Image (cartoon, rainbow, N blue to C red):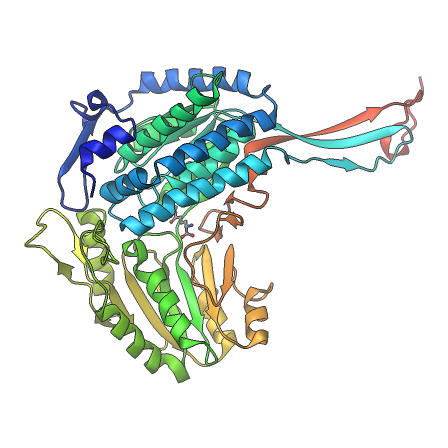
Length: 500
Ligand code: UN1
């Protein structure tokens, strides 16, 4: 593998910005110090918003297809740096290299989507009730967009927001997780490279601020930032949502999930087991779309548990840069402790726990590797209600599909969901209005690994926001309804007579 310094320099991170700062960045792989970067001060944040506003003033007048050109070139820069950025993602957040590459691919994909979109920011023509009148709906740039992202998708989430926000004519200020500032600095450097290639891009179009909750709070409360897109925990969203609403800003919230898969008697068990494995242990259970609950029909419960236990037995946990590793470390000790607490609670609730113990402690005393856990749960009236960001899979039995859908929906979160069935009636029911209540409802596909073409996000405590594909771009624009009178009369709507 390429060494850390080469990766830093390939990604354009200069040595001066990586040492002497007041934020120490450690790798979850072995706890080693990667860099010491500078935190953004409150005054610097203020200047950042000034620059973002100035950039917006210029950028909003650039024709959208020309704005798309920057994103087209950025996508190509990402293609050239896919391996380096993928490796830095692994190094900084601990996901396996394959997933690091996948994350960069997700960035490239959203760039492609946004380039096409830059010629398709369509509005409407609406029938006017008045003669000689034309009514239209147009979408305009809205202003600087604030992006708050989490450690687990340290680059993709920013790119979903930024690729769209930029083609929509906005500037972007990004506050990454304070656990993953290096990948953010690398993304900014690649974006600057693309901007230099394209030329004539306003300074301050895309900026990064480094900090913890205090900087996030400053961003959320800044009246000059009309849209805040925040991805992270429900606890974070509970603070961000009301603060943005209090100043009549718009928030796009993508918060916690508690995603389940229903495994019906007719399921293709081989496919179900593989999908559950990827969904439950991929990214060490630290995705918002991670499969956390299985609701299995009682006729297949035992065989599914046996097959999963066998599959779990073969998982290699370890250094995420090694090709044979499937599960890397948890992000930090707090994540490991939360996992242990959840497992203790599961036992108290009658669950039978397999796995969950710390691994590789001798080799990596300053890192937290855990054996993914399976918890066989008894028949219950209500499944686990909280999201623990760790590889814990609870398996519950069910008898009737209605009961399974009830259990499925009876949680506060509503992000992703799936059913494994070959019964067309069951599949259709699950995705219908009376089926899954989540933003994502899949059939014979796991809960994680959504493509960027669809709108991404969910309901209830997941926050209701949508990012990425479909018409999510509308979240980054303001809508103007215009009525043009090309007649010589002045008829009033609703037939009102107002003669003077
Ligand atoms: C997240 O965990 O915050 O669907 C995002 C997925 C990825 C995105 C996850 N495309 O799992």
